[in-house]
Length: 113
Picture 1 (tube, rainbow, N blue to C red):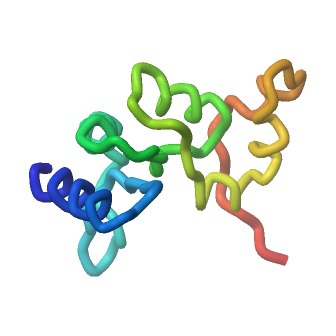
Picture 2 (cartoon, rainbow, N blue to C red; picture 1 turned 60 degrees about the vertical axis):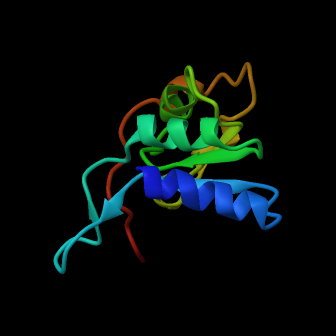
């Protein structure tokens, strides 16, 4: 964790103006990542720098966005696979969206046709 915070500070010192932190460690040969993202670690890195930080990981539905930001030093979240599996997640980002509840469930595997 300390190495990640030092790296983020180094990037900031080199002129980086925004940072996205993916809170997972590298997996093995069979799985490219190990376990869920460590949101507490992302938050610690965000607190260690003065530049805006986006949290990345564990964002598979709209409710996850709020969970990742709750009590966080991050300014936003980034989602890769969650949006690929359910693009409607983006349409529910606006406050007051009536479809937000439909996005709160888990997302299944994508179907390629």
